[in-house]
Image 1: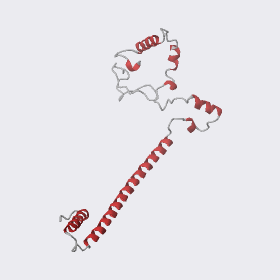
Image 2 (image 1 turned 60 degrees about the vertical axis):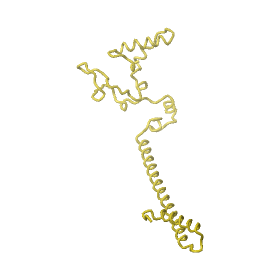
Image 3 (image 1 turned 180 degrees about the vertical axis):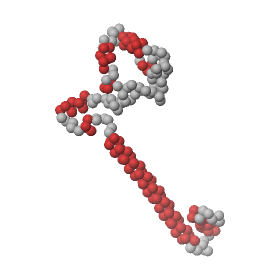
Image 4 (image 1 turned 180 degrees about the horizontal axis):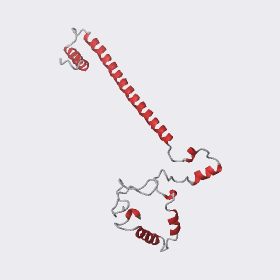
Length: 190
């Protein structure tokens, strides 16, 4: 209800609208647990894991809205008021199955865990760079080997005597020599 409240609407008006919606969705039955809701709504278990980003949060002393950049809230930060452990972790801790505090964190990330993850990502990045470098070196080596093979074929073709060859064979020989010349000596325009 808070995310869809109208301009200038008070908390009591939002609560009345929520009661009306609850009543319409539940066979005209009123919400009977408002007292309990008021008691537990501010408990850490029911707090949002990630606070809402809201530009207009509350009124300051002069009656104007404060922005999220210059707010001075009375609420504690999420780090100072952590959520309690879940049911399964609490039971396991009571039974003695969990001994260390790091095991109790459950799905929460510790600084050590984050550091290990960051280190592994750096190692992975370095390995990818080394692999790319090795691939480039391999490609250069293959290209160099191909050039050596072309050069040896070129030298073999140059050393062939074509004096007794027909005109068609001489033309083909010249075409192949020209091809290898362009491939091996691209700077040479001849």
